[in-house]
Image (cartoon, rainbow, N blue to C red; front, side, top):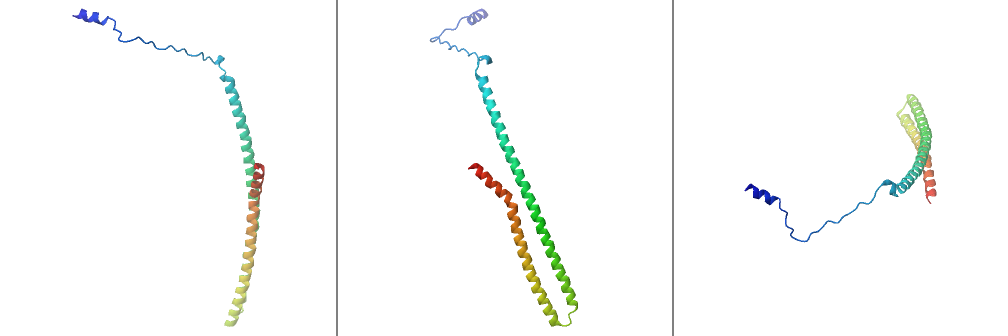
Length: 164
């Protein structure tokens, strides 16, 4: 029994239909020396590097201009703030002197009517002084704002003129 089984295994299978062979494909020769990709790739990378260098120059120039604008703005702000603070200190000095003078005058008051009259005069004078100080500080703040914005405004104007 074993013999027959072994002999059956050695027999060839019977073909059931037409015999189809797979098509034969040949791979092209892709040797680097025969390809034209290397010069094209070199040209492409060279152009990319040139564009990157040009872009870097533009970015560097823009960064330098932005730094200059910030420096100018900061300088204008520092000068204007110093002037404004000096004006505030002057206003405090004037108001302090006026308060001390008022206190000294109060020591000389003998009657209630003198007290009311002196207080009303001092209040009126201080109100006028405060109004004038506020007006001066407001004008100074507006000037400071304009001077601080000027470097940025000038730069924006130059940038838009370059673009058009």
